[in-house]
Image: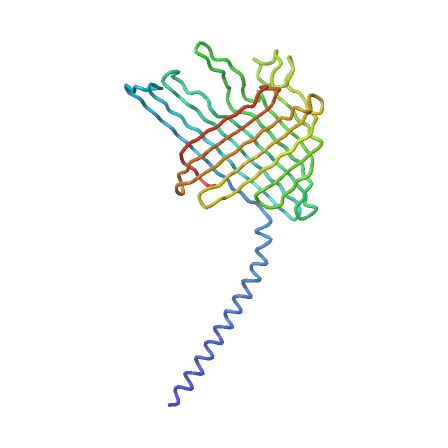
Length: 299
């Protein structure tokens, strides 16, 4: 009969010891989280998406007509490299795309997408959602572009033709991680026409017999990302530039949109829609849309 009180006493001691251990663990976790929190906010953060879309088609004795054989692919890289230390931030965005299409009627691969767009923004936080910032943007393409006709292919663009570099100082508004708005009343933009085939003509806003034109104006850019679910997310960007020295009412516009809807970890449908208005290049709105299904890697 004496063993029951002893057993009960040992059980009480064990429960108390276990509870004390739980409290110790909880206290340790609280301290650890406090120590880890600055590490989550400060330091380097990298993320992005790499996409490869492939399409292929073949026709034999098809009454409706069409290309007998088609083959195409597009690649797209969206990558962010960000750094934070105290009130200082450094955000870098890489948007790189390249795509080709081949069909039996023209017997060669033709470019359907080509973009190199890099933005670097250094900011200092002076309030909860507001930053002073210095922004640099570089935009061009990798390969020559052509205007295709039945008889002749005419080169209309190339690497650094045009090329654009923008230097801007302004205010950056960041209400949350999904949206940023940068506005600058003083921006310098350099337009480059490096290809010698275009040197003697007025093209891309650069006059004949010159390779670089300098513009002063106002600039604004907004970037928005939205994750609708684990399998669907959207990235969009809007750039506006007004040249103070020439037709400031003709605002240059650049819009890019990417919607990704994943089937599983690797495969997804990707819809890319870009829109450009720059009357120095084409006095009409330029529109490009690409829909594809392919490999999508979350980096």
